[in-house]
Length: 101
Image 1 (cartoon, rainbow, N blue to C red):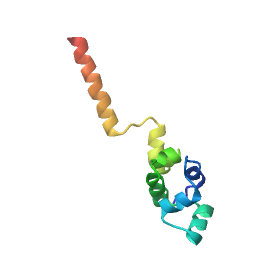
Image 2: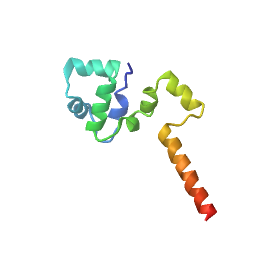
Image 3: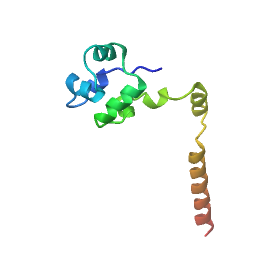
Image 4: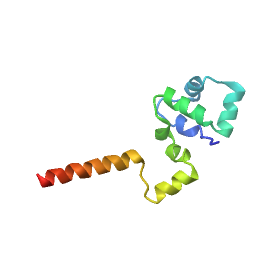
């Protein structure tokens, strides 16, 4: 399981420890543990969204952290998701029909 540092949330404009504790709905011991150990995926997601941000904006590695090793290998080899491939094929067919006309 990933742990996400608290510091990027505290770097957001207007976010103090007090505001962040409110977003996480915690205080005291649990808060100190979160500061020391980092946030779980669920805590990080909830905190970022409650503060008005998407997690991948706060932590740039957020999306890649969810990839399996196999997914990462596929992406690095140039693999594209099926819907992206379908869109590219449809765009190519549309271009061919325009050229033929």
